[in-house]
Amino acid sequence: MPRLLGKAAISRAYPLVRNLAPGITLERWNRFARPQIASRSLKWPRGLMTIQNPSGYILGLFGFEVRDDLHESRTLCVNNIVVPNVPGRDRIWASIVNAAETLAKENGCRAIRAELIDDLNPSANDRAWIVACLEGSGYALDGIRAFKRIRNAPRGPDGPGPDGGTRGGMAGR
Image 1: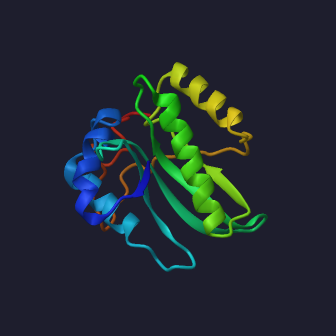
Image 2 (image 1 turned 90 degrees about the vertical axis):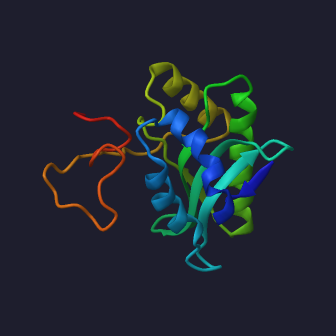
């Protein structure tokens, strides 16, 4: 069952995040999650959506934000998708896709852009599974996403990432 993550439940989602990205500390998760759940406005919402079982256990989650896309107008951007490699993950994935599509419709979005990064899904098997799930859900791979680490850059206002300045514990990439 999809549920928006509220302030009181931020720490309940941490074990799921830590399982897939062990370098992310609770402090870093809190610094990330708090602004994500503080929506900018009703017209341009953002947040963290969880997938929970009937007992309230968090099985998966994703971040979302409605943006103005040059080509598609209102677009739901989905990122930080967390689906653990456990039995039943196909159902968790399906719940995430359904929740994203519901959010898109409720917010008048013409498209959904889903972004998955290798930091949370590092194995080739996971990548192949994700591509199959995306395509099976009606998504088409679109575009290129690039990443460049800026060495010796001054720390931003939130300080370094979980491993002192690198993403998701992937030092030396």
